[in-house]
Image 1 (tube, protein in one colour):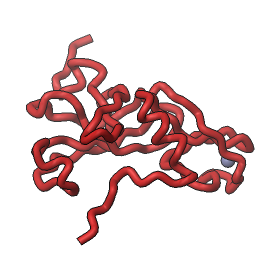
Image 2 (spheres, helix red, strand yellow):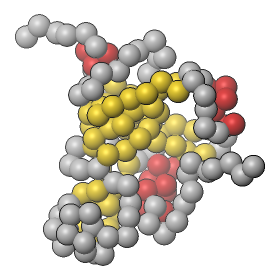
Image 3 (cartoon, protein in one colour):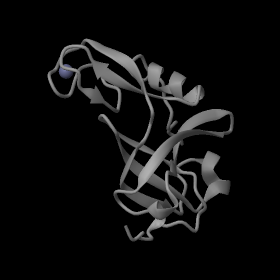
Length: 143
Ligand SMILES: [Zn+2]
């Protein structure tokens, strides 16, 4: 059985993976309409232009959804389960999957603020996120 490599690199995704290896988040930016998008694809999802360029962004964003993983998709993550994968809407545009790097006891909530952070597994750099504020863990703060 061939195991799927979650970090396959092609010409569209090379700038993203190079950014991850440097600890940065790189999305695609459309020169024609200014749209910012992720995942990296050959043409703009907004206007269809192929005039895309890499754009390094802060990686700040908000959790759209999340899931706790108990059965790893790859042998590389066997020792990590259970762990949490979050789907993050990056500010400025783009929706990205990544590991939530906070304590496993933390239960994330949709809308919680997160910051991008690269993590490493088996010599491979992968995208991750950390909750930006303690109040993002599901507690409410009076104003
Ligand atoms: Zn465009």
